[in-house]
Image (cartoon, rainbow, N blue to C red; front, side, top):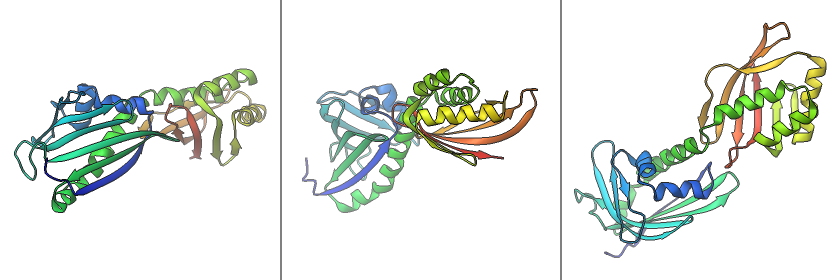
Length: 254
């Protein structure tokens, strides 16, 4: 290989654990979910890497090193030979645990600075797609998590509320809205209990589809009174950790 004296560095955080992220480098179906239909990877030293971009352009390379679940190295170049041919650059991807899931470090090494610069926006875009594909799979139950949260606000028994919250949220979960500024499951349990005391018989229900992006979930809701009539509506923004638990909730009343 030509001496690769120029490199592109990029770091992102993905809302999923390292083991979940690494599966996209060892499973061709997941690799294709990131890169495009027909893309494949044989995750062993000497194995072939193929990327088929949606526009029809193809890139290929060879796996140099695999150390699951933290590191993969492969060569990269375009089958057309332009701007570089197969084997004419080297990609190293490292994964490490982070507070929000996984920190991904990418280094792409080139022989020429001009070719490196052509790939800056490409990797910015492709890694953004990657973060979304991984997080979408990891948080595919995001709507169910939102529903469980709303059910918790309708639970009148304090012990049941605590148990339910512990199953969907971190111990230090934060809640913010026009009537809430609380932290921790215990405080939140009592806060919900106070809502039942002053507004007996009220319940919350999700209204429409939940929307998810990289560990953030938006869900509209309605408040229903004891007589079954709608008494309010709003939107909650949920932040999930890498394991899919609720870290924080911000509520907006309409």
